[in-house]
Structures are given as C-alpha cells and as structure tokens.
Image (cartoon, rainbow over all chains, first blue to last red; front, top):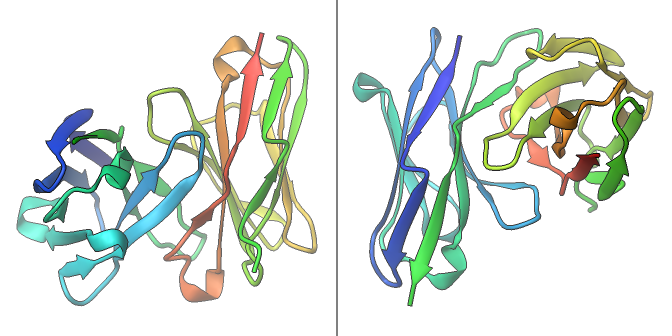
Length: 115
Length: 114
C-alpha cells in the first residue's frame, strides 16, 4: 500500500524567505509524485509532477521539487515566498496500473506568509 | 476550455437522507475519480470510473456508489447519510490514454449533514 507523510501541518515563512515543504512516501513500485495547492474554498491545482526522467522538477509559480529515491522524498521548495503563496499544499503519490490509478495524499501543510 | 465542473457547490442534508453529486470532466478526458476531503485532512480516494465502469475503489462502504455516463460525466451517490459524511467532495478527471498522469480537479461540493 502507498502512503505519504508530510512533516509539519503548518509552516510560517516571511515574505521573501525560502519555502521548504517536506514529503516522504512509501510505494511498492516506482512512484509517480505530485504536489497540489489548495486555496480556501477551492479545489486542487497541480503545481508539478514527477513521472520519469529528470529528478528535479520545475512547476508553476516558481516552485520546484526533487525526487530522491534513496530517501523516498519529494520535497517542495520555492526560493522566495510571496504573499500569494499562502495556501494548503498536498503531496500525493500515484501507482499507475492498467486498471486505472488513484492518488494517495498526505495530510497537507498549511503555509502562512508573514509580511 | 471549461475545466472540471461540479454541482451543486454547497448542499445541506439530514442524517439518513440520500444525496447525488455531479461532475463534468475536462473536455477530452475520459476518466473520472471522486475524493472525499474531511476538514483539515488530505483527500481520500473513493472510486474511479472509466468506460462507464468502476475500475478502482478506495476504502469506502457500499453506501457510496457512482455512475459514469456515455458523455463521461459522473455522479456520486451517498445513501443513509451520516454526520461523518460531511466533507468536501472533489471530482478529478484525467485521460486514460495519457496514462492518467495528470488529474484536474473541480472546485468541489461542500456537503454538510445535520
């Protein structure tokens, strides 16, 4: 069974500071990994994904994540936080099968950006 | 291009009642998945539909059922509602031929059971 652990349910950063959100996963097969962002009262928006190939993945809004197989991690970073980055972030793992796929999500990390 | 649309946006039901939630996938997508997101938690997979059949199911009781129509739209039905069914229900669509590697989510339906 797959699982995702996000360390820290809440993270507070100052505007302009580094944003680092941690995600560790477990999967019995090579995983597909995703980061989604959720703004209040909205659905989920895909920030970036890792399927195959380059392990450093760049996404929207200046975010990037690195797949480290040896550490079973997929941490999300952004060099300089902006007020608009305040939201909840979810890491997810997927196992692609012929029968279909499902996303298994972590518990989420809420980001607060201080001016 | 319309994305994933869900209706209604909000719903209040009484314990024991039944509810139907609706989802129209993003244009060109053929697979629909449903997720339940309780307050303060990550989404939990309910089930996935492709070619009008349930293909995968998460750990949810039979009170949760669904349907996919020939135009790929989908419904989620929940019978005998419990207070614990109160949550945001998210629909996601994807393309099977593309490996389903990218799911697009709707805004969700907020269900409150009283």
